[in-house]
Length: 349
Ligand SMILES: C[S@@+](CC[C@H](N)C(=O)[O-])C[C@H]1O[C@@H](n2cnc3c(N)ncnc32)[C@H](O)[C@@H]1O
Image (cartoon, rainbow, N blue to C red):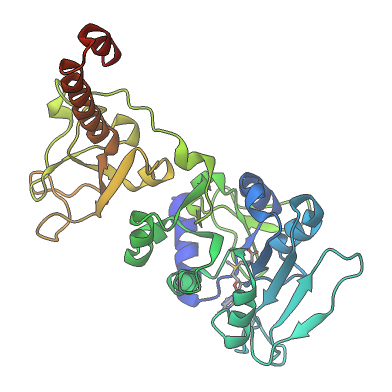
C-alpha cells in the first residue's frame, strides 16, 4: 500500500510537471564515487539545478580539486507560471560557472527561463563534456534525446520505467547507454518541497529538516563506463534436464526465465528475462535481442498468458565456445600436416 502511494506520488509529479524531487547528497556520493576517473579535466554541466540548493553543485564544488575538474556549470530553470506555490514575479533563469576559485563566480542571467532546451542552455551544453543531474521526470525522453543529439557523456537519474520507453530501450540495446551502479532502494530518497504530502512508510524528515520521500523506483542512466559492465553474471542453473522450468513462448522461439539468477548456462538460444537483468548486464556476456514483443509484435506469451515485461537476450559466450572449437579443429588439421605430429597435437589439446 505504502509503495503504491509513493509510486502514485511520482506519477503525480510526472503528470503535474512539477518535478520537484531534489537529490540527496548521500545518493550522489554513493553513485559518483564510481566515476572519478571520468571527471578528470572535464567540464561538468548540471543543467536542471539551482546552485543555491542543488546537491550536485555541492558535490562537484566541494570535490572540484580532488576530482581534477576543469569547470563546473550549473544552470537554474525558472518556471514562468504563477500559481499557489509560485507567487514571485516572472524571473529569468540563470547559471553559474565555477572554476575552483575561493570567491564564487558571478551569477549570469539568461535572457529566457533557462529551460534545458533553450538555445542559451544548449550553448552551455556544447561547451561541456559530461552532464550530471536529476532532470525533470516529465521530460525525461526529450532530455536524453538532446544529450544523444549533442553526443554528450551523461550520468542522470530517472524512473525505472524509463527502461521501457522505446527510445531509452533502443539506446540500451545498442550499448549507447546503460544502468549505473545504484537502483531501486539504492537511491535512498528525494527531498520534496513543503507543499508535497509526505507519503509512504519510509517518508521522513531528516536531521536538517528536509522532507524526504523514498519511491525506491529510480535508476541512474549513463554512458560512462563502469566496472559493473565487465562483470559476468554467475550462471549456476542448467536448461537441459530442467526444461519444465523454462517454458517456451507461444509467439517467439525462446524460453522464459523468471529471475536473472536462474538464467541457464547451457542455453544458446533466445531467453526472456525480467527488466532487472539490465542492472547486471555485461555486453561481453550477453546480447540484447528485443524488448517485450514476440514475432507477431504482441506481448510475449506462454500458453496465452503474458508474464511481466521481458527482455529477449542471448548468451554470447556459448557462441564463442563453438568458435573456439572450430579453432581447435583448425589446429588439429594443421597438426596432421606437421612434421612433428605428436608435439603439434600436444599443443592443440
Ligand atoms: C527532479 S528535480 C531535480 C532537481 C535537481 N537536479 C536535483 O537533483 O536536486 C528536476 C528539476 O528540473 C527543473 N526543471 C523543470 N523543467 C525544466 C526545464 N524545462 N529545463 C530545466 N530544468 C527544468 C525543475 O525546476 C526541478 O528543479
